[in-house]
Image 1 (cartoon, rainbow, N blue to C red):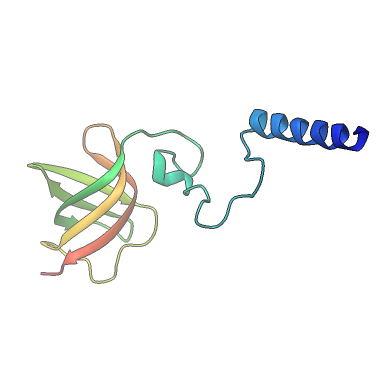
Image 2: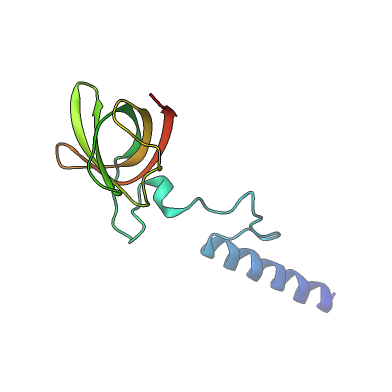
Length: 119
């Protein structure tokens, strides 16, 4: 009986500790359950919070450098600043998908670019 009480106390303390820490009593995180990368849920990689990360689809109007181009989306022109180098074949009138966050009125920053249709 004494051993049974000791085991029950240990299980209860482990369950309470798990509940307070937010961890399950049994098991651990697998790769399928792992948390998404910080940038995917509104967090900039340097820790600043940006609620407006999203995907923009539009047409390239001007390529200015290897890290900046202009894109027309919803009747407005946006300055797109990429987090990596632009795709080599990106050119004017290409239809692109841009994942980044809005900054100010017409900037999209920390962007990742995918060419949807190369014209």
